[in-house]
Length: 404
Ligand SMILES: Cc1ncc(COP(=O)(O)O)c(C=O)c1O
Image (cartoon, rainbow, N blue to C red; front, side):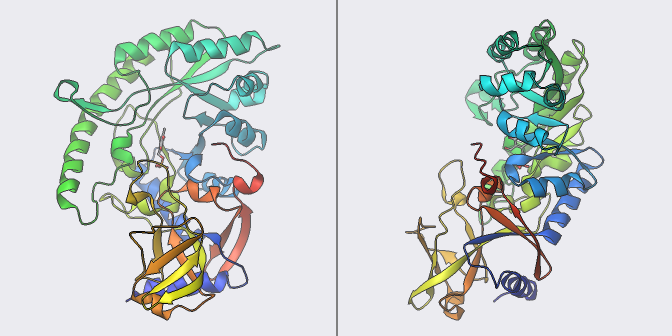
C-alpha cells in the first residue's frame, strides 16, 4: 500500500512529465531545497562547500550556491574546476583529489583569475614537484594554491584493523608540518588550506536496514574513529598553522555534517549527496532527507502476474560491487528488483503486487544509489516544482562534459 504522500508524489511526477518520453531524470526542487536547508541547519553556522561530483549540473550548483549556508565548490577534477571558474560559477573552487594533468596545471598557472579561484590537492612532494615543473615552463605564471589532504582512516589493534579510504599518506602532525614547510619553501606555490574527509563516518550509514548488529558495529567504529580523528585533526591543524596561515580546514560529508561541525579546528564542511538524497543515504540516524533526484523508465512488457519489465535502468553506482549499488524502485511503492537480473543494461524486471496495476506505456520511478552519477546517464534534469516542470537544465553530460 502506498502512503497518501507517496501516491501524491507519484501523481505529481507523472503529471509533470506526461508530455515527455522516458527514460528521463527529474529533480524535485522542493525536496532538494528542504534537503539543503536541513544540511545547512546541521552545519550550525559553518559553510558547506558543495561537492560537485554529487550534483554534476551547473544550473543546480548555481541554485545551491545561492542558498544560505553554502559557499564554494568542491570539484573533482582540475579541467572541471577550470570550466566552472571560467563560466563564472564560483571564485572559490577546491579540487578535492590530486591531479597529474600537466596541461590543466599549465592552464591554471597561466590564468591569473583561475589561479586565484582554484586550489589543487596535494599529499606528497611528487605532487609539488609536478606543479613546480609546469610553472617553470609557463610564461608569467601565477602562484598555484594548494591544499594538504590528510589521511583520516581509523587504525587500531597495532595496525591489524584499518577502516577508511586509501587516499593520503599524510597522517601525523609531523607529516603535515613537513609537507607544509616544503610547500612554503617553493615560491610558485601557496598553501591555502587543509582537508581531512572522514569517509568511514560521513559515507557509511550507521543504521543499515534489517541489520541491527552490523549497525551497532558501525556505530562503535564511528564513535572510536571520530574521537581519534578529532584529537588528531586539531593537532595537525595546529602544527600546520605554526608553519603558515590557513584559509580553510575542510572536513566531513553528508553523513557527518552535524558531527564534523562541532570540531573547532574545522572551518567548513564538504558535502553534496544530501541534496539529491540517493538510496545509499537512507540509513543514517542523524538525518533523513527527501528523495529529490529520480529517474523514470517506461513499462514495456508484462511477462506475467506480479511483474512488469521496464526499458533500461542498469545505472549502477561506483564502489564495492555489492547489491547496495543497484538503483532502488521508488514509485509506485511495492516494486522490487529481481535478485537474478538486478537492474539490466536494456531491461529491468520489477516484481511485486504493484506491478499488476501498471500497463504498457506507464512509467515507474527509481532512485540511483549515489547522487551525481545519475547525471552521467541523462543529458538533462527536469526541475519539478509541484506538478509542473519549472525548467529543464543540462547535466554535465548534457553539456558534453565527462570529467571522469
Ligand atoms: C573529499 C570529500 N569530501 C566530502 C565528500 C562528501 O560528499 P557527499 O556529501 O556527496 O557524500 C566526499 C565524498 O566522497 C569527498 O571525497
